[in-house]
Structures are given as structure tokens and as C-alpha cells.
Image 1 (cartoon, rainbow, N blue to C red):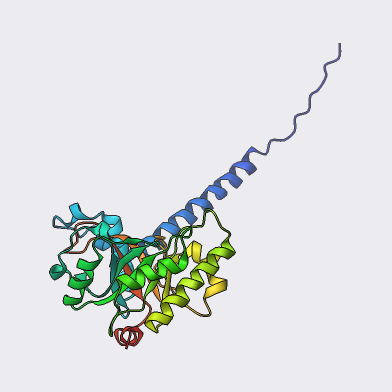
Image 2: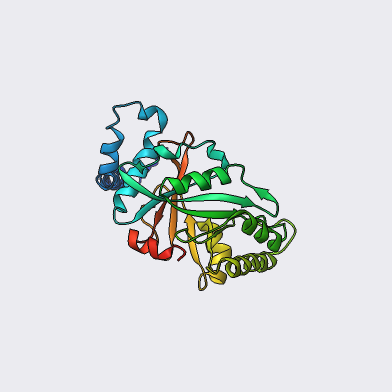
Length: 278
């Protein structure tokens, strides 16, 4: 019987191995480049991260502190402030001065929520914050499913703004449960108009960036200024169209026992004075 000759296809093992090697090399190189870029970009924050030598490390997570340091470093020409409510408990206003060597110039204090709720610490915070020489502003937490005019009256009854105070703030974060978005916008405008007529100053609108982009920007940005919350760790600078940027909710400030929201004003101290009620 004649033997059958089997012809084998030439292997391409060598070629495939080279291709795999270069693919891995490129991927690893890109990863290393990204890491080196990140280390260089955040060099100040990283040095700050490893510089803790006191019990401060027990009061605040290092990564949170590093990001706060990084953002403040990038906004040395801007004005830094914070905001509080009853959730911060009893505040020792005489101890409040600065955050990471950045002077704190202003504070927003929650006054009311909905049509009948008054923040339990507002009266105390409002009085003591003025004595501490901070520029003071008050905000109302808006409840979408309650009457907008009754909410405006609740705020007006509670807050007596005067010369040197910041404009009133409408805080809107929730979506309505029993009405449409269009109805919500009508209610917001009613609150804003009612409050503006009473204080003779146009209010500021506070919201999260996503809520602002999806529901508020197109309808309100031509007539109102915005205070935007965005805690994204990769975001380091305030957007041009934002009046205030709440960039963290995890700051530690002397005189306050809980973590605190911190804000950047998109301007200089002189510009902030122009913003206040005259």
C-alpha cells in the first residue's frame, strides 16, 4: 500500500507572537504614560497627601483632603465659602476662619424647606454668622409637590435680608412625583418672581450639574445665575457660566463638627461685594 504524504500548513507562531508582544508593549506603555501624567498633574495633591503629621488625618480622609487642596490651589484668585444647615449641629462661629490657609469669606445658610419647614438652626446660625464678619446668604429647599407661593411666603417670613447679604437662593434637587416637568418649571418661576419682588433682587438657583443640564439650563440660564454642585474628583476648575461651584461635601472646618460643603465663587472679593444687596 502506497504511503500518503500529509502536507502541513506552515505555522505562523513566530509572526503571531511578535504581534502579541507589540500589542502588550503598546498597552503597557499607554498605562505607564497615563500613570506618569496623573502623578505629574496631581503632584501637589500627592505631596499634600503624604504630608500629614498631626491628628488631622483622623479628622479627614487623605484623598478628600488632597482633592480639596488641589481645587483650592487652582482657585487662589477666587473667593472661597461654605454652606450649612441644621445637619451641622451647633457651630462655633468664632473658630471659623480658613480652610487649608484659604480665607473663608462667605456662608450660605439653609433657612426653610417647603411651605412650612424652618431650619431648626437658622435663627442661631444667621445671627452668629453675621457677628463673625462672614458675608451671609440664605437658601430655601424647594419641594416640587408643594405650592410654590406658600413656599416663597415661608422663606420671606423667615429671612430678613439686609444690605451686604447675598441674594436669596432657590435650592432645587428633586423631581416631582405628581406633576410634569413643565408644571415644576412654572412653580419654580412663581417662587423666583415672588421672592424677587419682595427683596427687589434676583435670586440665585442652586442644583446639581446633571439636574441643571437636563431640566434648568435651557429654560432659566438667560435670566438667572447658578450655583452648581459637582463633586467629580476629576473636575478641578469652575465652569465659566457658573456663579458658584460646590465642589465638595467632605471638608473639615474648625468650629464645625461634621463634614461641610465648600464653594468657589467665580470672581474676586471685589466682585463678590458687587453681588451683595445694596
